[in-house]
Length: 101
Image 1: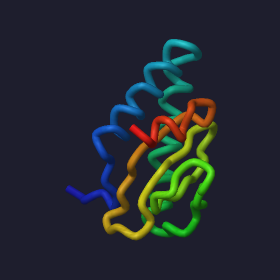
Image 2: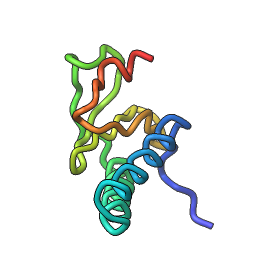
Image 3: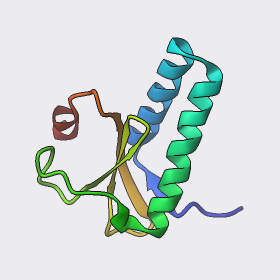
């Protein structure tokens, strides 16, 4: 079994589940599956090139980077191996408040 080059926090795993549930209910199972697959592929890409994301001082002072996939921010720590994915949040949410929790 191949080890993933990244780790999802429990909050990030829950974020993915919520995103899939929302998309499956609001749109379709196929769209939900595609968006989640694209997010997971992007996380794999970020694990290989963690500098792809951007810092967002307007959202947090912590050492986190943001990478947009569809309308979802993959929020991660670029300096950790395996890559540490803290959250996966829709960009329309109050990301600053969510990160402050």
